[in-house]
Image (cartoon, rainbow, N blue to C red; front, top):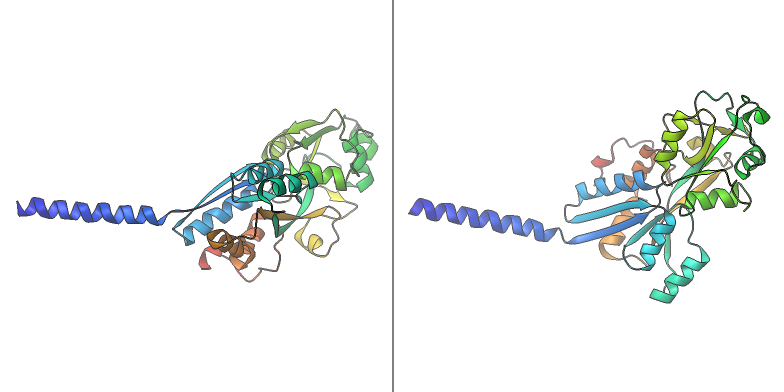
Length: 285
């Protein structure tokens, strides 16, 4: 009898402990947005949750526009975006929340031009790039390559990268009607790796299996971006409806501090400050 009572007591203590541990994990962060930033966001989430056991972070991609719409609807706490918020998005946010939104610059990215490793073209001018993606140049022979048609691949219009490229490379001209649309950077990479005549664009953190083309003779390296030599570079953002508070603020502050910026560098993007002296972000508390 005494043994059974002891077992019951131990079981109750175990259940209470489990319940208390479960109850502790009541702080949630919902984050959606940029596919370009997705790998980095997932790394941030994983590392932060290791260090903060009472936090659960749910991260999804889908594109910057997708993230902004969920932020406007109040369905997420943070939107990850590879572009600034557009005027109509600001208007929608203001109408729904009486707020204009708060942007947090979290990293810098060089927009890389992906080519197949077997493509003899390794350097393009900004004008050639514009003419290729707008459809005025349709054969690799015209830019020093083989006599074969150029297959243009783009991200979807929901992508912040799509809009950035259209604005800063095409000077707001339209993409060629023959462009094939892909809904993630990884899908672009997979297609480029299989097609010698294809060309696409995306973040420098992607694409171990493809060639990262030089633009006007400049490679998309971290040093070239830091020194403002590479011509296609941009900031990456996190957006909140209002000034973040509580655990949301703590998470963003952590990203902007050394632990988060070390992850930025490890993933392959450009941190806001140099992190060369640190090796393992998990060592930072």
